[in-house]
Structure formats: structure tokens, C-alpha cells
Image (cartoon, rainbow, N blue to C red):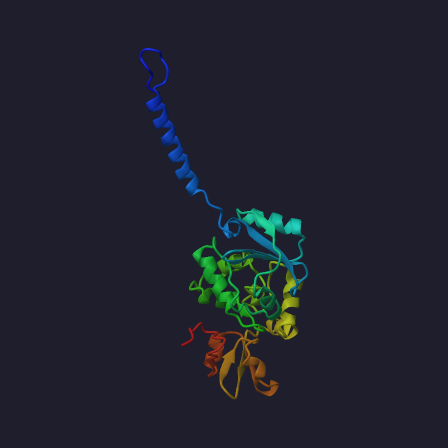
Length: 271
């Protein structure tokens, strides 16, 4: 309350001047706190989307300041944006260009140094995706292999669910994961797309289907005594005259074969 002159009821000039000085000082101090927003603020809040060429039609990618967060194929911008917003609670804006490393990663099927933003995944889901990312281009591994690599050898069915939620297929190659019986299995973009991707990586899909039909899960060389998954690089070098097929690792071991150290059908971790 402003002090008044008791004789006339008018504000005391001394108090009035002091109040103005304090107000002006406070206003000046607050003005000094005002600053422009950092140029990276928008990228911390919003994700960016871009349409790029890839091994499937209509590849669209969303990325944040942490890396690539979402990838889908066969959608237009509106469909992609709706799918992204249904999963991520942040705005999605168009980008002028793709992030560095994205186009080479899609072209070669190798992630390289491209950063991924996988925040929001459970620890198990992240472990499954890391395991799938270790499958070499041109090779496949069964769900059981991925479960072992993720540290949960009995969670084969849960692996399938985690791969079905893969936010960045193509970059984390869940198309390289097959059923334990050797058949290709399901895929987020459908069976034909999975087959197309594998053929594009020079996987002999016809042979894989034939081996699965005959119950052959592993292929060994009678010259080296080593048994591998059929798409392993070592298995593909075995000539027809020296190839031996096995339905289980136990059968191969009983015949005197030892597991390959590269594809590791026994789940042994590399040295």
C-alpha cells in the first residue's frame, strides 16, 4: 500500500519515487533474462520425416536429434504421419534432406555408423533388435538363434512379437529372421516383401524352401566336419558332393560334426 500524506490524502512523493525505482530495476533485470531460443530447440521437440529410395517402394523415415526412430514402406506422407503419431508423442515435420548415412544404409543393407533412436523400447525388445542387427547381409537366422543372442533362449515366441514391433525395419534387418523349421515366416511388410529383400541380398530362397520341406535345418561339410546354418557364408562354399544335411544339431554332433564358429548354431558366443 502506498503511504499517503495524512493532511491531504495524496501519495507521498518519496514512497512513490522509491516504488518506481524498484519497478524499473526489476523490469530491467527481467529483460536481461530474455534470450533467443537455441537453434536446436525445435529438433529436440519435433521429429522430421523424409521420403527416400530404398529396397522397397515408398520408404519413409522419421528421425530425431538422437537418430532414425521410425521407418515404413508403402505409405504416403499422411499415412506415415498418422502411423508415427499413433506410436510417438511428438510432432512430425518435413525434412529438407535425409540424415547422413541413411541412403547408404538402405542401399547396402548395413547400418554402419547411422545412429538409431530406439528410446521407448523395453530392455528385451532392444536386446532382440541388437541381435537381429548382427545377422550378416545375405544370411538368415531362426528365431531361436535371436532368442539366444538376446539372452532369453526360451523366449522364442516373444522374439517374434518384438520383431513385429521393430520401429526401423530394413535398417535393423528383421527380414533375415526365419522360423525354426527353415520357412521364411512372417514380416511387417508381408511375405512377398520379405522374399524380395532376401533375394536382393542373394539368399537362395528356393533352396531354403526346399531344405525346409525336407526337414534339413543345418548343412555340414564332410571334408571339414563343420555344420552351419544353410545361408552361412561357409555353408554356401560347400560343394554339392560334400554337403550333408541334418535336422538337428544333436544329429550332426552324433555324426561327428562340430558347430560353425561364424554362424554359431549352438549359440556359443564368439571369443
